[in-house]
Length: 424
Image 1: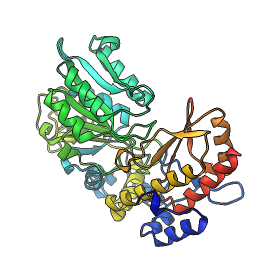
Image 2 (image 1 turned 120 degrees about the horizontal axis):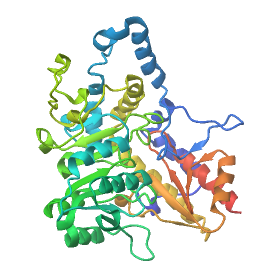
Image 3 (image 1 turned 60 degrees about the horizontal axis):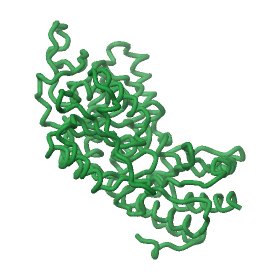
């Protein structure tokens, strides 16, 4: 859809919701309520996704097995805990466009990033630099700087930060490619966000991977704001690794177990340095308790400890919903819903705010980042008082995302009505 296809007014929003084939999924989630008991306009799924109503039954089953079986739940539970993480593997692989053996649910995002850098950031005297985007999520910045220092290099000379052109908020694809071409022979690792957390810009991951590999660089992505938001084809695009959290668009709950992708060309790279733990050991001989570590094939070989079952159960509940809805259909609705939000916001014709997220649907996901001039934080506080939940990022950005699994056209309409009132 384009702007010419949208219409203003509450009646149009209601008609679009009535015609939406995915509208029924909204009923599968708990929506926060205002003090008056009305449903909030929740536009913060880019920060924390809502709770699927089925989560409780998934957790209760594991609590029941623990109560009734104790340690035997590892082998004789309804969903035995020994292979439990594999219950999520196929659905997670579909979501990120990977082969099942290329993905694993484990740890948290930054822990996984550190584990991957142990194996894939291997600087030398000639090739030691690490390329990220300026304004990457702070945890990524801290992690890469610490990795650089750990190897005895100085971030001042080893860290390359991609910066938008003057007067622009987003990076140009051609500027990224030019920088890789110019400095690639000194770059050991390229690590970019699949979707930038602040601007909502979607990067050309296929093109970046091709450019980086052409220069001999390892290429990786932080998919925290991409997984469950946009279609991904990690296996075909070919990055060496990727990491993501599962509590944003994937609704796994606060602090949920994260995800990790390692391309299959590294599946049998037994000699690649890695930090080891017993859950990454060859499962056929794991319980022989031998002294020598023999990694499992694929991404599972980077596991450290047995997975937290009560942390994985909510994610299973959400992934089942994703599998039922289908990422292609969700993306189609997302494009329409975000376009509708932009259409209504532009109709306000206000000089109090501007957009820093690209208007091209191919270069953004569900998130719109709005830059406020002046008293933006106060306006957002007014919205929160009315039950409109987005999030503020200093110094001047308000982020909102209409998530296609549970947000509606009427949510978007109500948000813009409340914003118009707050601006006045």
